[in-house]
Length: 187
Image (cartoon, rainbow, N blue to C red; front, side, top):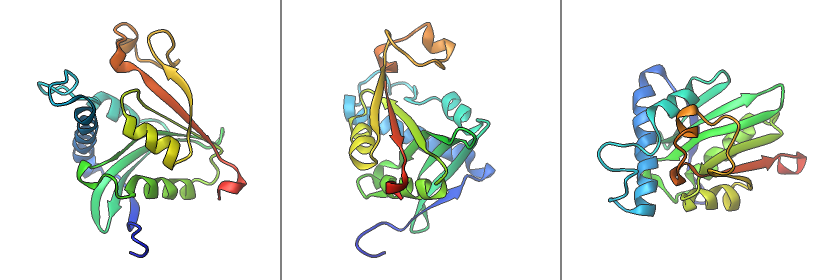
């Protein structure tokens, strides 16, 4: 490593690592909620997960899904799931997580630079994060150059809201939607 930059790479998720990927993802999201709301928050008690297995698997199994482990110096430190639409030149960052013990080391930012380099054909990237994830909001806006373009809440939510959420919408489902337009000056 030079200039204190982490030695980061992305490795395609192997089938035998799917379960650990899901567990690591849930642990990272739970950590974020506990940091924001504390251990007594109802989002994290009694085995409840901040991000469900169903949500993670839906992303991993998407028609255009690319799932990667984030690797630092040979050790797995996180993961991400992309949905790539080559025809529309659009990419969705469905999930990005860094293991809690590896936070604030430039890992997420370095991983994202690799993603952009892997997909120079993508003109527009989108992602979203829960309203309470101040750390993520800072990361997407101030570190990666995304812009907040929408706020999903009980009065306004996205077109693809699963039925189980539609009927039981709560403050916990509020999300910010982010977009990043790529141009030749970003390369």
